Structure formats: C-alpha cells, structure tokens
Image 1 (cartoon, rainbow, N blue to C red):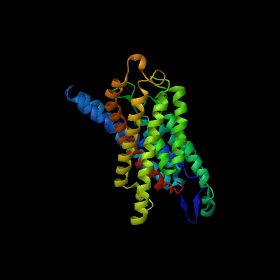
Image 2 (cartoon, rainbow, N blue to C red):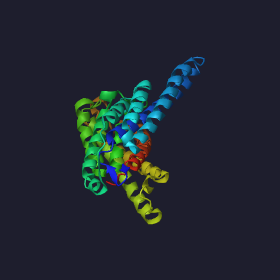
Image 3 (cartoon, helix red, strand yellow):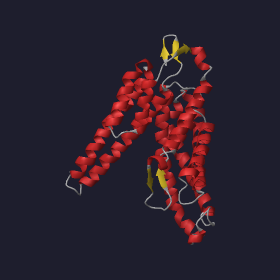
Image 4 (tube, rainbow, N blue to C red):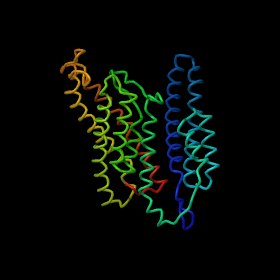
Length: 323
C-alpha cells in the first residue's frame, strides 16, 4: 500500500483476503436463501419467503458491507481499526461468517509498518510464501469435516459438491501453478485424515480431478497471456471475462475427460480402488460416467469463475506481481 514515497511493508493481506472471501460466500448464501424462500413460499402462502427470503436479504446486505469494508481496509491500512470494526460487526450480525469474523479480528490487531519501495521488492518471496500459507489454511478450513460446507449430488452416490477447491485455484492464479499443486497435495493428505469419503482412496480421485482441472486452466492461461501480451499489453488482461470463459471451458474439458477415463478403469476394481464387490462391473461404470461427467463439469463451472473473480480482486488490490 503506497503512502507517499513509502509503502506498507506488511499490508493487511490475511485480513483482506479472509474478509473478501467471507463477504463473497455470504452473498452466495444470501442468494441461495432468497431462491429457497421463494420456492418454499409458493407452497406456504408466502411464509417461507418471509422467513428465508428475509434472512437472505439481510445476509446479502451485511455481506456487501463486509466486501466494501475489506476493500477500504486494503486501500487505507492506516484506518484498519475503523474498517476492522465494521467487518467484525457485520460478520456477526449477518449470518456469522467465520472467515469475515477472523478477518475483522486480524484487521483490528494489524500493525502497519512502512518501508521504501526498493525494500518491498526484496520481500516478494516472503509474501508469496505467506499467501500460500493463507490459501492452504483456507482450503483446509473449508473442508466439510470442519464446516459442513458440502452438498451431496442428488443424482449419483459418492459425489459431493464442495468449495475447498476455490482457494486452490486462486493460489494457482495469483501465486503460481506450483502453489496450486502444493496446496492440492496438502489438502489430499488432510482429506485422508478427516474426510476420505465412501472409499479409503477417495481423496486420490479428488486429487486427480483437481489437478486435471488445473492443467486445463494452465493451458488456457498460457493462451490468454500470449494473446494479451501481443495485442492488449494489459497485465490484467488474462482476467477478462472472455479468458475466464476460456479457462472454465478448457478446465471442464480436461477434468471431465481425464476423470471419465480414470473412473471407467478404476470403479470396476476391487476395494479400496473400486466397487467390484458390490457388482460394479464395466457396464455399470459406463452407466455411471454421464452422472460423474455432469458432476465434474458443474463443479468446475462454479469453482473456476468464482476463483477468477476473487483472484482478480486480490491481485488488483494487493498490487501483486509474484506469479
């Protein structure tokens, strides 16, 4: 953060990122509650909408305020107490966003220091490591074993919609592909310990799905960077909507294609790899593949765009140039 000829050496990075993601998740939850209330209201003469819709609108308002305060905190770190209090209050009176709550506390205890711009540049590796730790912690924290933030796919057994891959993709985009892969491997180890799924080898399937999606994003990112550098000369060009669409499309293709092949050969195997002891043969695997493909496509369909939006905001506000 610039302050005259000096910059904040230790900007409120963790507080900003946690508050930002907490606000965005609050907005998503708010919209979900409004839609659910509208559907419930159709069969309860409006009572359902009055309850759930009202809570959803309140969550939406509080989360937007948290987002604004997080942006102000990052741009005006010397006013961290004021913005930290706002983040803390609206995280509590909203839906109690844990990430926003932690972000507000970190903002309150944050102590800004100043240093010259030349000294800041020598500490990029430290910032890179710190951001990797922050996103690794977020990934683990969003594990359903700790937060219950997961939704079983109603059309197939063993498939769960989750959001722990969002911070992985964010780290992949704003830090480096190596950071994304590293956090993915760490998360796999955590999944083995606390949330393996219906198969002991379940985390390996998630590892394969996540890495194949990241490979697709990498291919799309390489294409975007080459074109933006040649035509647009815009360092943020690869974050534009058309490139987000390209990354999402290629990420879906890579994930669905790789997982379809993997599941075709793995599921008919004996446990702990597959379900052969339940009569799951090659024919059953073929019947299962469309549902699995739809699951992998829809999971990537919300994971990649949300990650791009947060990554763009974080990279722009923190003035990162470390990837």
